[in-house]
Image (cartoon, rainbow, N blue to C red):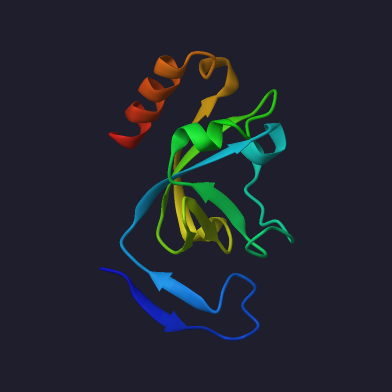
Length: 118
């Protein structure tokens, strides 16, 4: 069960922060994003690192030399299928599925499953 608590008005993410159990999330990125998870200053839901709850959605954002980051998020705000964290400390990276493994959907999902079930 999730609980809503008000946060400081200066918080760029949302007027409410969702405190919930950990969730597995996915982020499609390029080679720079693989090296360093950085918060973007702009986005539909404000400042933060944007994740998806579906690996196939994240896969759409992969760039050449990048891949899909699989992580367990501990602190996030949910907006439908999008999860937003303040910074990299709000989660734990479980692994990365490089682009060269994401050509076939079934292979991609098999690699994701390996990381999630470690």
